[in-house]
Image 1 (cartoon, rainbow, N blue to C red):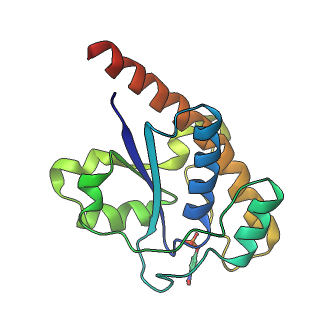
Image 2: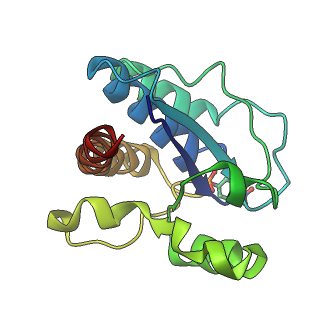
Length: 165
Ligand code: 4NP
């Protein structure tokens, strides 16, 4: 049975990408696809490596039933472009940083997360780090919508690969 691996990417890996990871994990579990969709997250920067998600992200996520506490920040590595079928960046700066270190043949693997929620009318998940709690709620809203679109996309892809097998 085919599997797919995805990695959410932001700058610090303590606010947006761990939130997306926890939201996607919950949606994938609810869809019964935990054994077929592997989920991770990483940051383009190294300032917070080894740290748990930002307390505000943990709190906002917990209030909606998502578990961020066990996650630990790590930095993107060159190996991630081979390991993951999709690297889902939160903003254009993340895309630029990823493409700079990505092997040219694997560039298509780098996408913006909000491509999977075109109805929102935004390309970027705004960085909530220097703002108030409303920023973390906005991140959750955007991640919930985009992960739904992403999950539907992956379900279609997995079904097509099952048919081809
Ligand atoms: P994230 O947010 O990229 O969503 O994890 C940030 C976390 C930390 C910093 C910036 C953004 N920082 O400047 O330390």
